[in-house]
Image (cartoon, rainbow, N blue to C red; front, side, top):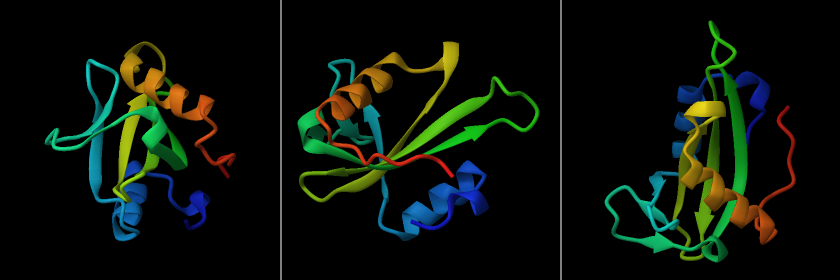
Length: 112
C-alpha cells in the first residue's frame, strides 16, 4: 500500500485499492456474515483477514467520520467495506470486524 498521508479522501483510497485488486464491495448480512453485494459468496470471521484500514474525517464536520477496510477472504477474493463512527455506525459491520480482530486476523498497523 502507498503512503496514507497522500490519500486523504475515500475516493482516492478506494481507487488505489481497486487498482491493487480490491474490486469487491462487501456488506454484512443480518445473520452476521460478510457477503458480496450480490450475495453470491458469504464468509464467516474465520474466513476473512483485515489487510489494511483507512480513517477519514469530514472536512466540514468532525462528526462525519468513517473507516474503510481492505479485506481478503480465504478464497482469495479481495475487496472493501466501509462504516461510519458514532451513532451512524452499522453495528453489524462493527461486530463482524471485531470478531475478525479477535481471531487475530488483522494487521497491526496504525494510520499515518
